[in-house]
Amino acid sequence: MNTPPARSRGTIALLEENCTVCMLCARECPDWCLVVEGHTETGPPAKPGGRPRVTNVLDRFAIDWSLCMYCGICVEVCPFDALFWAPALVPAEGERPVEERDDLRQWVAQVPPPPALDPAAEPSEEAEAAARLESVAAARAPRTP
Ligand code: SF4
Ligand code: SF4
Image (cartoon, rainbow, N blue to C red):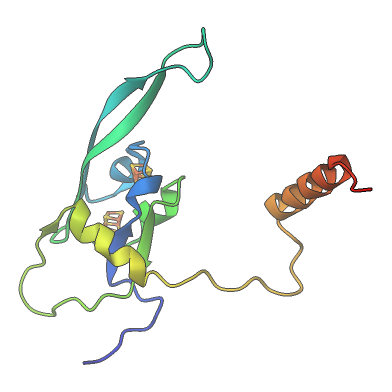
């Protein structure tokens, strides 16, 4: 069997832990092929006297592949890195069915790692902030005699 290129758009993988049920992907999909459903749950406040925490819980995430154009807009707009392309081999004949969250979750293991940064690139703001925090923590750490 042929091996597809690592960055080919074979299927969409859902990293369910990152999904906040914000619905952005479903709203931005030009073909309305995404179904995202969820509900809210109320938990105890983080601190005594605080407001109860309300979290979104994902109930359903499905793609109708018969409508999908593989445009990648959903992957691009997801603000929480919950959607990725994975290089799956899709049958060339026959209609691809609607796939549910369990189908989409299984592809996460095949998502290739992001390409390495250009060695000449400036460090990211996140990396600089992390380095600053580390140096502050090191300066505050008690010294061993
Ligand atoms: S790849 Fe494009 S058409 Fe397919 S689900 Fe994502 S936004 Fe919709
Ligand atoms: S945009 Fe991302 S976080 Fe929001 S519902 Fe879609 S997959 Fe989940």
